[in-house]
Length: 381
Image 1 (tube, rainbow, N blue to C red):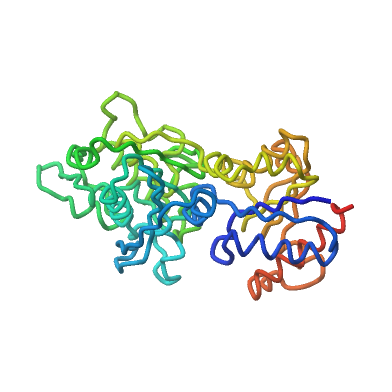
Image 2: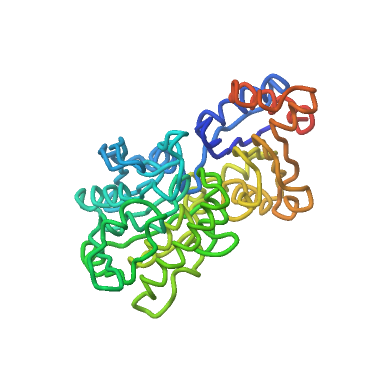
């Protein structure tokens, strides 16, 4: 039996490469004769540049950029011809925010501007920006400020510094001048590869939908929603008269999608970009089963993330698709409609064995391997 193993990263515990290796190791315990093909993936979030570099080649340009809490961090820009690929998680990822500093009211996306500037300096004419996995909720204000945008209060005083210090400081900004930032990128084609298709505001927007997993409590989420709403009013509409706040993907990466749309970016689903690049459809055509996975299989998974993209690709060719996750938070009726044949969670597997679910984090790779061995008993033939 031929099985394509194509997971995303398990945020905070395993990279996509590590997850694929763990799944294969566990699967072989049950089905040692199966032919397993490892295809680690990314939807624009963590691992985006590494996955594309493995498939496209090109040159990795190492650099240091501003991190989400101020300290400089190591990052890289992938240059393939005149196209550069950057991954915002390398500049403002949640993994870069110490646990005791996780407050998206204070974390910044300024380092994303550094990544973009490195791409421009490397003579890129097209920049594909992978969005996802951030520890920020500032609607890209930090990036805009670092690219030269100016902010003013109702009295006309320059308050540009507020752009650079997180989503909590955006109230009180009355007007934002994006002309300097747009001029800095004149002649550059920006493309957003986003992991989710949500708008900036609302129940599933940047704050309400994602800020809690970045360290915000309910009060902080309400504060951020108000700040982002105020900031969007200050920025106003795009030159074409449209409001990027309601566009698909505007709420991705803590609202970085919103800021990039204001700079003229076009959006493509991040997972589609990666799947085309790695040739997943061709790999699935020669397989009997597809196994994918991520840390938490939840409502977000069904809105443009790796699991949804892999399941759709498998369904198109009549192949079964099994999800292995840290935890499963969607029901069979919800996931079956997306092409997922079955879903298994490490936390649920531990409970079934009468073990404490907290053990899921004591050795994530081994726990995932155990889960894969269990799934193989049902799905290998």
